[in-house]
Structure formats: structure tokens, C-alpha cells
Amino acid sequence: FPVFRYLISMKQTDFEAILQENQARIYRLALRIVGDKEEAKDITQETFLAAYEHQGRFRREANFSTYIYRIALNFAFRALKRKRRLQTLEKPETIRSNDENPAQIFQREEKEAEVRRLLDSLPPRQKAVVHLRLYEDLSFNEVARVLGCRPATARTHYFFGLQNLRKEMKARHELPKI
Image 1: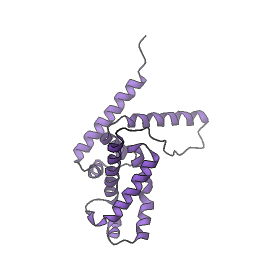
Image 2: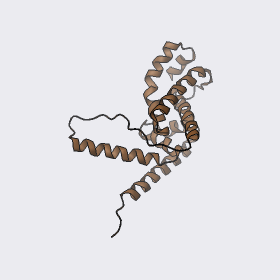
Image 3: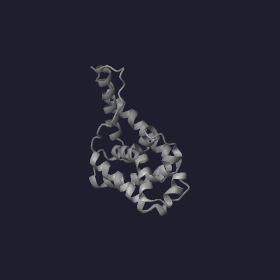
Image 4: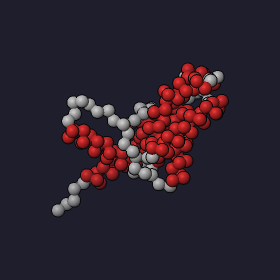
């Protein structure tokens, strides 16, 4: 990946450009994992500081995004361990269509809130894999590199994450029998 050849001998101004390119993705990932805006901002800062300070440790077989995601996940998982419980995710920015009426906007926002609540119910690894696959569009090989596991393990976490989401959705939407 050309960015990392550049990273090895970079100056602070060069690193700022890379930070601008990747900051929003890392923030979204951290927010999805820890569920707190301020904590996610801290994790994002810690991630880029660690990447800059330890740029010599980067193994060039991986992409920059894989490397930075792994650092971010490590910080996020540490934050979760410190907190010992997950909080409700803050609502991410959404793009609104001018064609939507208020009722459609309300329905879409309700569905998004439901999905966030469901994702919050997953164990941290499953949540991370589902987020990286669905929201960051990473392949299983990339997810595996980020998590430090084999692609088959990433697929397993994804499968069980989706299975748990389906189970939870079914339980929430089942009507009581009268």
C-alpha cells in the first residue's frame, strides 16, 4: 500500500493528511464499539498517536486501514474492559433525502435506532465483525487481519453475530398469543 511506504519516512504534516483521510472511519468504529462519543474521540486520538509513534512496527504485508483498525479495536476493547458494560450508541450522522416526508424520516430513524440497539446486544467481537463487514465494507480476510484471527474465525463471529441479531429481532417483534 503506497500510504505506508510514505508513512515510514513521513513528517508531521504528511501524517495529518493521512489522519484526515481515515479519522471519520476510525471514529465510527470506536463509537460503534464503546457507545460513547467522548470515549470514541479519545480512542481515535490514541489510535493515530500510537500509529505515528510506532510506525516502524508496521509490517508492510497489510493495508494501512487494516493496521489502523487493529490499533483502534485494541484501544476500544481496552476501554470496554475498563467500563465493564456497554452503553447505548449515539446516533450516527445520517444523510437525509429531500424526497422523504416527515413520516418516512421518522420510520427510517426508528429502524436505525432499532439496529443500533440490536448491535449493542452483541458480544464485542461479534459487534466488531458485523460493523467492519456491513458499515466499513471490509472482506473477511481484512476483518481477520484487523482482529488478529483467521478468516474462518471472522466468518464464524459474523455468522453468530447475524444469527444473534435475527434471534433478538424475532423475540422483539413476536406478538404475544392471546
